[in-house]
Length: 232
Image (cartoon, rainbow, N blue to C red; front, side, top):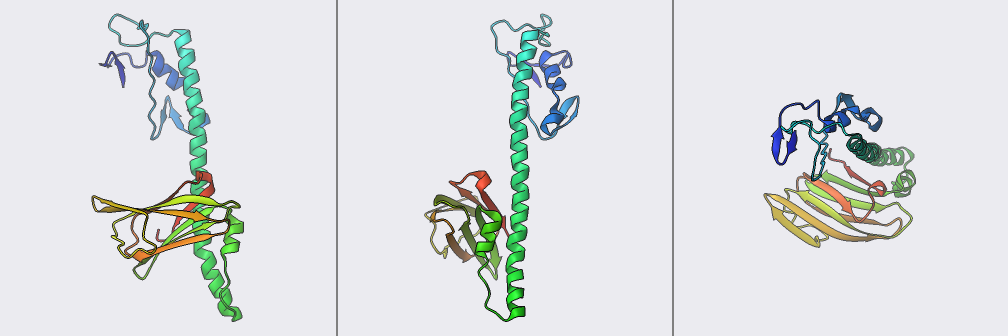
């Protein structure tokens, strides 16, 4: 979609300098599919501002191929492409870390219980093992017999002050501990707990409910946290 002075430009799309710049950038290098223009869930906005925009004709159908304009548009697109590649790479690493954490959190307790059963010894504390594997702040949410349990463990080496955000359709009036903030909107309840965790420390909350909704941690960098919903 192209506009000039808030008027849609419907002709000579391929002849516009901005369109050619977008098509000529190698978006595959930034992790996107490309067939001329880049493909995917992507929105690119190019804004050329000037008191005298060099159009190809008086009808203002397209911006002319001025080397200075094309160079600056291309450089801006390449700069954004590098940022996009970093974002996509970080997102993929976070997704992989969450999948690994979900597997660890699901398998280790069962493995520990089975080992204790076979050896006839008490159930061991597996938190140190999880800490050695993850070295992150791990938030786990599970539902057992109509009881929603939230647990946050600090496997980093520093003290943290963070907020536990949860949204669900459960009223959670019996939440223990009670949230520091709670509000309802369109049958969705948002709860916030202010939590301080020492290195190796943990925090737990529980309430009666179905376990639907989402959970997130604020106050900690994205690459230092893992959020695992064991109900998924």
